[in-house]
Length: 99
Image (cartoon, rainbow, N blue to C red; front, side, top):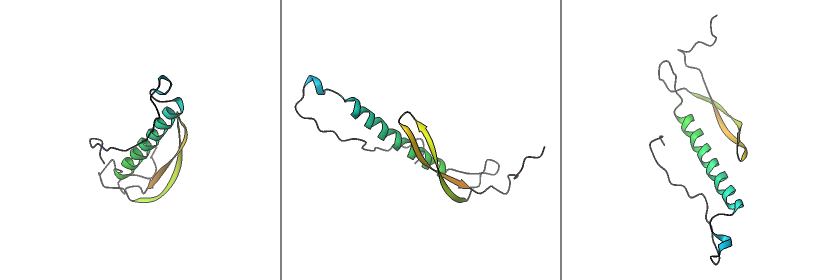
């Protein structure tokens, strides 16, 4: 998926009883659950998009993947584990900066 493409994802399903003044809109718990779910979906999609488009800045060739780890991202909704792929360096890129 590219930045210009849209995707629809169902984040929450809610059932309400009889409509009353006390149950209009979201409760605090429902709002937190919805936003946390949306945050997880967005972070996963962004991480996957970044991993697919990894290429050498010098020559433009795709970088070969050599493994994957997990990093922890801190969000408003707490710590979130995110897959973090590792890539081999391109032959064009020097391994050390001369100085």
